[in-house]
Image (cartoon, rainbow, N blue to C red; front, top):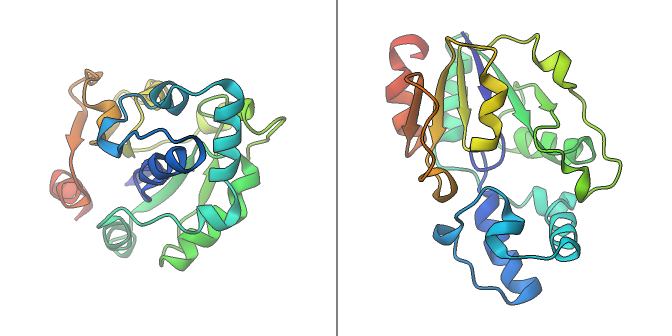
Length: 202
């Protein structure tokens, strides 16, 4: 089996960090559970300049390395790897964040996972002229049997795989979204993801 795994808010607690950061930078008290949109600029009511400054701060290498693991993620991925599954981490982070992102994986015992930076969201809006290591045309030649993703904005990247089973990691910003089809399952934890995928992935 081949498995796509998103990085932010599936492997690490990115939004919880930004909830604290927007308070520190701008005095905006938006608790994690009140983040209603994947678009943090909209959720936090930020100007373009404020959003750009916040995202640059949140992507400094030392900050990326400080993000906390989503409970159960490392254990589950290593279980799958030990069972012979092929896993790829497909992140929307720009390639300038690759080294710190790679180091975070290595520090957390996920050194066996390949990491790809795919321009999922057109995010050169905050890192000017940023580049990505995986172009969409290359991504669309990849095949996956399962995916773990939290962002409704990324679901379009699954349209070419009609049999793909998508585990939607439950987050405040996707709870009001209608899931696209019967192959999508909302999961509140990595333990639930393991249960949902057990017949195929062990």
